[in-house]
Length: 422
Ligand code: SF4
Image (cartoon, rainbow, N blue to C red; front, top):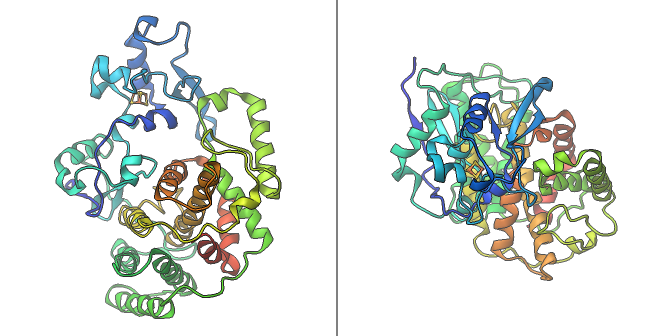
């Protein structure tokens, strides 16, 4: 039996600002008990639920198991979201009667050796903008929420694998995450340089057979490769290598996954919406003509406009991405059980791919607004769209998707993409 000890990211603030975005974008899966409880609440037209509306939508979970989600309104919002942007269940029966998924959002709790660490979902605009009280000042309330999902009597779980071929102990695993955090917390360095250093550190890790290297010896080895990555990358390379056309196709397909908005309206659309999605994927693969607008915020502009010059990135980008990466890494939100059970190396590469994908989406938002330069709001909004899927949409954990990331890493094209959109 282990004592419940919760770790919080010290660099992040958050409070709910009632924007109701989480109730408008997320598919809320409910347990059988939650479903029964909501049915017993006896919702009728007088509560604002349309007559004859089905409260739940049946979907197929893992291994074909039937699962249920709260149904959505025609505009994609949860059926229980009222015209004022408030939750009907919360208003009528209290916060504790909402599905657990709604109560926990935007927190994510993961095992980290003997502790539980907290990460956050950057699909929440208040998380992205770092609005609210520092999390470490809300430890008591956050611990109560964490206890709803993590039993106090939990068994300690093993750490994620380091790579496809290396499994190590927790103490050693945490030396790797600490090394990445050390690179990222450097205040005077731009995010892109820190990202290139992290990519190089992870590449060194991937190429090294650790064998019996552990504890103090491993710590010394990691200090050496951290210093090597830092001294190797002192500035942004003047010339950026072209991304191969095959990898540009792979990258656009990745962006298309991040740009989707999946609601139960899409699911209910059956073959027609599947065909529309397939058609959109083909257009993203070709990268020619107009981009199919996958959400209302995106306009149908030519693909080539995304590749035009957008000038330098706006102020605030370094802080935003540094915080995102530190929260995800400290919060174990990029590999292992929190990210499709992928090893540390692969998980970091996937996290790194989120950077150029978000900037691509931000360019699309800016061009949709007929602008040739990026504003911080474009990038913040793009991140809420992308992080909605990162680690949550089942497709990101499939073999095909994982192969796509591996292909991008080959020939350094992941690095080239990070530089291209910076
Ligand atoms: S049940 Fe309430 S809190 Fe949960 S998504 Fe629906 S409206 Fe939002």
